[in-house]
Amino acid sequence: MSYVDEVFELVVAKNPAQPEFHQAVKEVLESLRVVIEANEEAYRKDALLERICTPERQILFRVPWVDDKGQVQVNNGFRVQFNSAIGPYKGGLRLHPSVNLGIIKFLGFEQIFKNSLTGLPIGGGKGGSDFDPKGKSDREVMAFCQSFINELYRHIGADTDVPAGDIGTGAREIGYMYGQYKRLTGLYEGVLTGKGLTYGGSLARTEATGYGLLYLTEEMLKCNGKDIAGKTVVISGSGNVAIYAAQKAQQLGAKVVTVSDSTGWVYDAEGIDIALLKEVKEVKRARLTEYAAARPSAEYHDGKGVWTVKCDIALPCATQNELNLEDAKALVANGCFAVAEGANMPTTLDATEYLQKNGVLFCPGKAANAGGVATSALEMSQNSERLSWTFEEVDSKLKGIMVNIFHNLDDAAKKYGMEGNYVAGANIAGFLKVAEAMTAQGIV
Ligand code: NDP
Ligand code: 2IT
Image 1: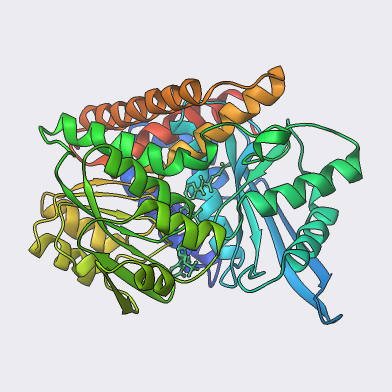
Image 2: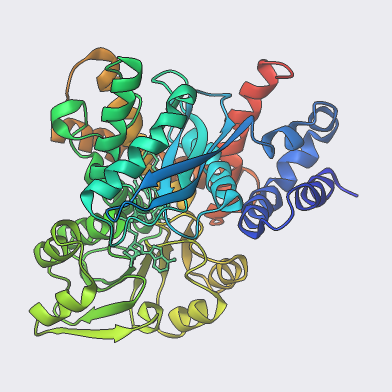
């Protein structure tokens, strides 16, 4: 059996009941086949693939907190420190009731290659909890965040592991966590990114993932003789990534006609009103029904449906496996020619294959959404030098990084005989740097 197949079987056997982790590993290993086969003996002897698929450390802990009625609640806390070959562990914290160890491992595994692609010195990690911030008071969220950090603080630090936001973790949660870390350690250091601007945050970090997604999409289209201006875009999600993706798409001259949340979706024939969307989602933390109620051109639909809307470009920006084979077929039938992932692993493997086979330009999340973590690394740099850069400075660095990422994966795909396969290109380019660093550092 080939080394790749052997390791994949091992990963499934050793990590039972973690389908999202298996899926992420399968996608990466499949596209590394050519690279591995060229170096099989050395990689096998060093158990390089077994090591890269096994977290360096997994921290699982209890998070007890008291709700507004005086009742004690208990959540599970996770931090998976996956790989530190090229820098301190770096990656977000997801707060969502669906969080379990397999989900955190898939996200941490993806983060290794994503962070490598940024060209910045950051290793891969991810964490979170099955706590649901939805419907909680600010005091309850603070109680949870403080309890979470009461355990996590001993495992993180500006040079060891630097968490950030993800689903359910935004500026409010990062603020409470930062305050508790500072109180426990007495250190005023860049231990978290996505901080507020008054205490060490970076300008443009809020916008970075969505803006970065569009910078990369623009470059991908340009290199394929297409232009984003005048195109119709469908977006899923209505959180941090979706909002700023929609904003940048509009700035680049596209028309964004959909957004969604976990209960429904909106079709707005006149194009999404970003100011209204921000008011509903960032200020009121309300449902999309409020957007539709305030906007005569918008239709609200229950359930899932954005991929059935006719479009040129689709940007999944909500969650994993939200775009399946049936959705991919609908997109192709409606003439969609580009899909770029703002979320992590939003497209199922069979849907990805279908899109690629039907000539759709497809950029995977680990490249397309890397602007968020890249700008987090820029926040770390600013914290280290105790300076703050202007919005324009950060934004222009972000754009440079995204354009570079696209060319790295385009070049890697060409070099290994898979021109246009940006999934393979991203996995190969991300892997090679980490593999070289791991090899150089010996068996650790
Ligand atoms: P937010 O919490 O700000 O927004 C998440 C959005 O997705 C909400 O609209 C939410 O709807 C929807 N959503 C979440 N879970 C589900 C679900 N199970 N089914 C349907 N809809 C769902 O998160 P972000 O925007 O930060 O993250 C979105 C995606 O982008 C995630 O995959 C994340 O890992 C990825 N990402 C985020 C980065 C960042 O910097 N924030 C960086 C790179 C990737 P509702 O409010 O109803 O739950
Ligand atoms: O998935 C991701 O890259 C993030 N949630 C952002 C991580 C970070 O450290 O900024």
